[in-house]
Length: 411
Image (cartoon, rainbow, N blue to C red):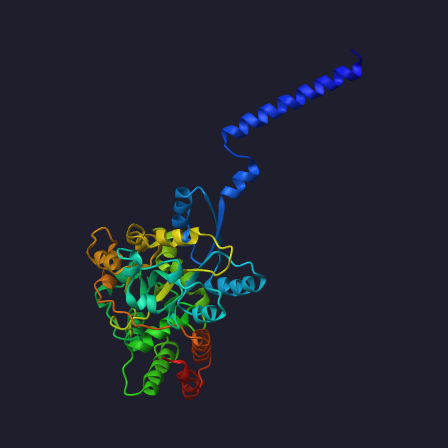
């Protein structure tokens, strides 16, 4: 046999050996790479709350046949703006976290969302049927529900418990409204040494807080209610002088670093504070002065499925996983959100394992206002922020002008 023949025999033997190894390996894993890739279904989910990651990770571990891709945005506004862009480019995710603050009506009008009845029927025994009615109303538009509520945040007054205890005012933590809050803090400040840089800070989500104050106001007319509320807001800056103007973007970080005595914000900040205060000082929660426990306007977070031909069938399973009673019972401790299931909310009040920092909140009746989505939600939110910041930043601002511009947007 010549040299060429030997070379061909060796090459043929190498090829046959390689085929044998390749065949044996993929018979053990039962599929070729291309086939296995097609068996793993992708599920893309966009959220603006990083606190959902433990839940999403658990779902991923329990469903290895699903490749859960999670994109976390810094804020709801960032997510919403990017979602609008992705809808135009046909690159929208399978699931998206929505806030009741704004956007639901516009997305429903555009056909971007699937009605929940198409993927989350409220069958007998389903947790979906136990969601507090006013929570589902917040995502209902033109006879359809467009998202499944998962958590509810209500506005509260956080306070630095260590500082309050040191000035001996722990028993004076009862404020009927913003005026009373301002005058009380002013009295504390003038009566002794000051261990903080600012008395009161208010979260940058002014609209959520303002809507709760609006529902808690009493007055013969809508105009008189709004006028009194704007006057009280101005008084925090220029009368009692307990709030620095235009500091809302820094309010959260200032409270975390111990610079602020009181901080008005939503309960969802609990998870953030627990992580970054990390024992530097103790803090507590009080009802927001001027709000009414019988007329609370919660800031709700929900998951919605996007419409489209190629959306993952596992979107429904993920929402069902998130809304189970087991996961709802863990919600407050992990995220600071109240559960949305009526039965779990009632059990929460009696649960001895719940942190005592929630005592003042959970003993309230907690009745929620029903507010349906509107295309005016976003402009109202922006108008509220603009007007309140103008009142804070300009001592000569005329409240009558603000009243005229804001009143048409109020419910």
